[in-house]
Amino acid sequence: VLDLSHNKLNMLNELLFKNIFNLVILKLDSNNLKLISNQSFSGLLSLRSLDLSNNFIEFIQENSLKDLKYLEFLNLSFNQIVFLDYLANFESLKNFFVTNIFDNLNNMNNLLQTVKPKYFKTSSYRSIIF
Image (cartoon, rainbow, N blue to C red):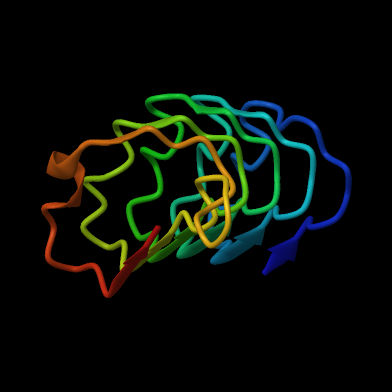
């Protein structure tokens, strides 16, 4: 487990985690992250849980999660993401959280406008919470 929560991080250097092959849980919640770049998580071949909640993420680059073949838990809640067009094809992903995505009342607190259904075709999901 690597817990970098509540550290006021505003960016992740590319290849920052490239030599941490055995890391299983990465907590980056409650920082000031705005962008997840293509190689932010490169090399995290064993990662099963990634918490990016409570940041200011607006954009996740297309290939930023491609190395996370064993990812089972992904939390993107409480961010400012507008599009999730290419996040899936995670056959291992069982829990995907993007709660608090829309403003108002009991709706959620992000700006999500588009989630293409084709990305949720896998039957391995236990929960997808919007």
